[in-house]
Length: 468
Image (tube, rainbow, N blue to C red; front, side, top):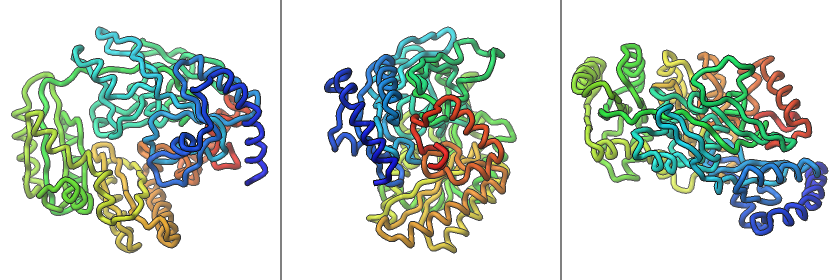
């Protein structure tokens, strides 16, 4: 155990008595609970916290943060554990604050199309609550994540083309800072030029600046007309280039998803589907102005002109769900390509015009490296994901995968992109931030130092360990 880890452990034991007195059975040091909270769904080694608190109110979070600050104990916020980059792994020990019990929908303002929720509320719970209003919250990262966690990691997903990411849909926050101060950011006004935009600062901060306890969110009308299609292409480049053209022509695209041959092979095995194992697009169009019949005809004609081999349309809810089933289950299906393997999942994002070239070079790199990695992507955003299937016991494979990951990031930056489109930084992307941000990284560190001078808020994330 490192000296600093021993010091933190002693500090935690001193704090544990106060935490136990204040929270009783909602605070635990049980090993099974700690282990459960020591990892997310990513590939990074687990790192359990020293204890776990199940918070039910903002006041719980404030009191816990006060106690931890007094004893120098790190604090790690936890939602549903569905992140991919080790954002919840307690690499310095400390107290994990589980916010999943804070599930209330506090208000819905249908006329203004906004709502306020507690951080532990999930998107499915919110949308169920909204079902009679004609409104919905459309940001869908795939997992049924908590909305606080989605804001903390700046999540997006399949609907980003039309509705934006959490960056665009969070308009206000309640945040508990490192000293226990509660701040309110933003508001319900549709625009403001009042001071620094603190809401955007905390969205994507991964718990390193404060703990999000409440969110005010933008809602959207449920579209009256929806059509979905699945289009098969001979080549990856043709599929991606079609999406670029579709976006440039201004069609009402809500989702534009891509799966390569390996990803299709995986879902066909998983779902027992008889789809062609070729590069495939999954597209969806939304409209509340009028039926999409004309759009469907025009898009199919354009698809044929651009080299699509086959096109399948769906307009009923059941037909659409059937088409989307393959894309939604890709993450569960991919390990079937190599039983016993662990998926090292990562993502990058590039300008849309560079996406085809970036994917083509990545596929060539995978072949050269001898690695199996299906590719799926939110191609309407220029964002794609690799699931590199490796033997977790084979260090040579892990090393090769990490070298490939470094090349992937360098390639994306070379194309004018970013190290992560939606997974966040956590533990896995830390080495690459300086290459993307240059002197801007020092600005980020100065903000961290100003808001968290003891370095207790989710330390080790975003910045490398010597810069908590």
